[in-house]
Image (cartoon, rainbow, N blue to C red; front, side, top):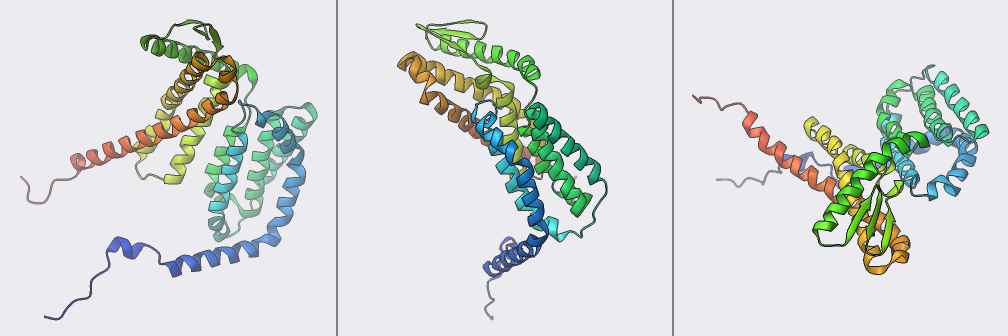
Length: 318
């Protein structure tokens, strides 16, 4: 019997070879170089228009805890657009006049925000102007391809302080209560009055940045970014994880406040308000990331176990 050459698995055959990947990268570089003369003036205009806004953001709002996620959101947005840009260039250009009203709204928001020092309007204008340029130059099909990056940018728009305060207070109360109960059960001398925790000789005020709406929005943005990158095929898994990010955010906030409380109790108020306070913020996001990955893995197992139950019975079965 003649020996047969080993067949390549179908899964491996579907993977691009190193030569194909190199060709794809070379084609991408060629497309980007060809598009540069068209887009450099646009990029230069955006830099000139929004440079004062970004200067204010980096000197003010983005260096604080409440809006510290802003530069991360913007950087991830640019990466998402860059990731989709070859697909945008591959689409036939179909400029749409619908972008001009959006551009007018964006410029009006920028003018009003700069003149009246309304940061929410200034940041919103960045989103509107960028979206309008895509629609005017490439059309609605290109905008539909980039819908998630522009939706993602909404998370860096500062909300009115009155709205933030109204929504944050119940969250701070809940985080303070759970922190008190956990440490009390663990045997620590802790009490609570509203959002003020008393542990030993120290008093800690649970601030907005520790357990507020902005933290929830930041973690929700992190979760949605994760979903967009991994691109699960199961709609149930995507929706469930997006909803579960809210309790995940709450648990991560509790871990952060518990960490700060214990640091203050053992090492004093200076340690709790110094470097370790910033370190607790890292603990918050690491905890949230671990919980998101853990919940996603659990949902993956649940989806896999649910498939056989819904599968059709094999032929010939009674």
